[in-house]
Image (cartoon, rainbow, N blue to C red; front, side, top):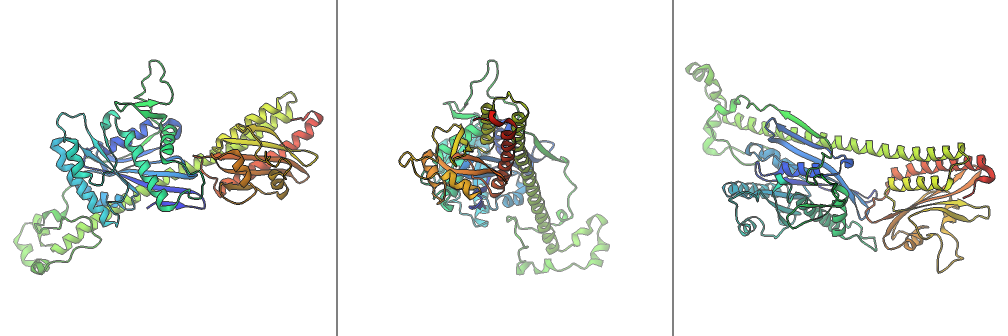
Length: 527
C-alpha cells in the first residue's frame, strides 16, 4: 500500500510485474535499468540461479520527478514465474499499488499466460485488492515470434476492463519504456485521485505532462517512433548507437545453487496435499481422512519395512504442517530480502542527500573565500554562479540574492532566471515589501501556492507555473545582510522540514561570509 505523507509531501508506491515463467518480466526491469541515465544511480537487485532464473524477485527502486510537488519513489518488483514459487508471488502482490502483467504472446505458451493471469486475479482478491479497479497495464510480449495469438483474442481473454496495453519485444527493448510510462500514468493518476494530491493547487499539474517529463528526466527520451524505437532528447553522436547505452548503475545479483536439493521427507508420503495457494494455517482434515491422521503403530510398521521407508509412518497431518511451514519460511525469506534491498536503496538516497547538502556548504565557502582573498575577483560573476549552483541543487527554477541597503530597502543584486522582483507589485509600487517583512521577522518562510503567508502574493507575481518558494533572511548578530530566495515550478519536490532546516545553516554560512567580505573589501565591495 502506498506510503503517503502529506506534510512532507512524499509518496512511495509499489508496482508489481507479474506473468508466466520466461515471459519477460526480468527483461523489462533490466531494460528500464539499462536505459536509465547513468547519473540516476538506480540499482537493480536480482535473486536468481546461475541460469538467470528468478527465484525470489527482481527489485528496482527508483525515483522520478515530483508530481504536484510530491517527492515520488517507486518499487518495481518482478515476481518469479516458475510454478513452485507461487507463495512468493502471492506475498509480493501484497500491498501492490499497481500491476503490470507481462504475457507471452506465443501460441504454444498462451495457456501458461492465462493460468498466470487467473492466479494473479485470485491472489489480488486474497489480499483484499479489487482486480477491477487496481491500476493495471498489460504487455503482450514476444511479438517477434512467428506463431503468436491474435491481439483481439488476447484482449478478450485478459482485458475486459480495457486497461492500457502495449505490444512488446522486450529483448529488443521495444515496448518496454512505453509499458513503464503507462504504468506510471495509471499509478500516479489513481493515487492523486484517491488521496487528493495537489488539490490545493490552483494550477494542478497534468498527468501527461508529468509522464513526459519523467521519461525525459529518467531516460532522456522524448517520444517513441512508429517502430517503437526511442527518440532521444539529444542527438546521437556520429558512430554511436542510441540503442545500446552503458549500464546506468550496478546490478546487485544474489546467486543460489542451480543443483536441485535432495527430496524432502514429505515427498515420500503418498497422502494428497492440498494444492491451494499459500494459507496461514493448514486446512482441517475431512472426516473420512481421520484414520489417516492417526499415528500408525510405529513398532509393527518399523519392523516390517526397510530403514529408507520409515518416514512413511509419519502422519499426514504432520506432513501438511511441514509443507505450510516451508511455505511460511519461503515467504519470510522473500519479505526479508525485499526489505533489505529497499533498505540498501534508502541508504543510497541518504548518501546522495548528504552529498548534496555538503555541496551547498562547499560552493558557499569557496565563493566567500575567493571574494575575501582575491581583490580582483569578479564578485557579481562568482555570486551568480553560486546562486545558480544552489538553485540547481534544490531543483529551483528561479533564485535571487538581495542586499540590505542602509535605507532599509532590499536590492535584488543577483537574479537567476528571474525577470521580475517578486517583492515589488506593479499595481501597488509603493506597497510595503514582503521581503523586508521577512527580513524583519528574522526567520525562514517556506510556502506553497494557495497557502496564506508573506510569500502568497510574490508566488502569484512569478506566474501560474510557480507553485512554491523559500525565503531565508541573511544576518549576523551585528548586521542585516540581505535575503536569499528560491522559487519552485511544477515538477520540483517541496522542501521537507529537514531540508528547510539544512538551508537555514547554509544561509547562516552565507551571511557570515558576506559580512566578512564586505569588511575586507570595504568601499570596493559594490554590487
